[in-house]
Image 1 (tube, rainbow, N blue to C red):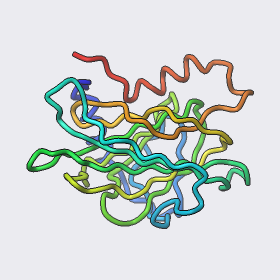
Image 2: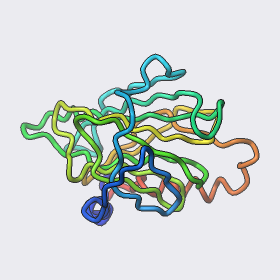
Image 3: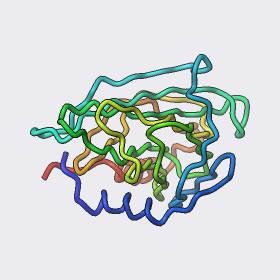
Length: 212
């Protein structure tokens, strides 16, 4: 799926304007271009995960493909929002077969209901350049200054949410073009169903693109 270049440029501009934070975790609010992530996580969810999904390598479409990406996602229970609240973990593997590799710069995660969430990443290779959360609740991870090259995987990113349930849907991986890749995402509580149509469309707008 082809993506207008301003979408990619937004990620690069956000990364260039980001400032480093020393906080142990970052509190992200809707519409907040929060900037650079701190390193506060272990290597990943490990044995604490109650659910884990690894997508198949997924090329963007239509051909010719510009990149092929795989998304690993996991869910753990218990965080600063409460004992039953879920944390959602993500990392991206760039399995593109071009000689030089391609830079996967953004992963949009639909949160379904705008609200503050806490975000961390693990130190290591493939660290984020920046991140942000749009007003529809979609979180975007940007690697525009630290691209994930061919054969490399990003560090784990974790989103602490107040949600207590999850579902396998899709997230969007973007690098000039975009593709939806299966991953575990939160679903809303029954009390938040009102207005979900508008909020869901706003969240998906961060990474859904029509074919040109």
